[in-house]
Length: 102
Image (tube, rainbow, N blue to C red; front, side, top):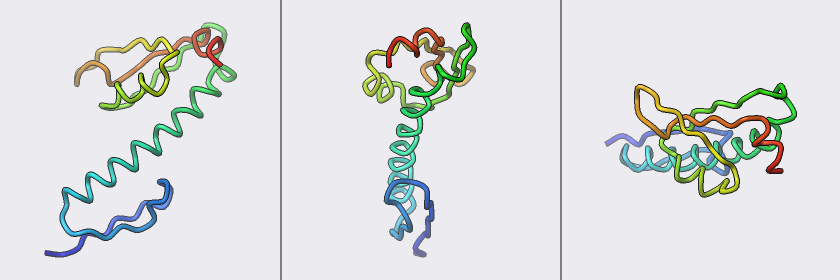
């Protein structure tokens, strides 16, 4: 079996990864990407109110990470939108909700 080579230099400490077996590589890549995106989401939520109009809204797709997002940001009143692919994949926050929770 060939060793898959995965390179993603912008994700945490994951620089170059060599493992045998696709499922393990997929799991490690998904884990590091989710952690990286959580860091990016934290920055986005901290700065979004400064860039939105007074009645503006932030809509973001977070995939299947609803529980993790709600646990990480328990003070934010996320409104979860239904999509064709399911519920809990996309959230909406109003500027006022973001501005009061700094």
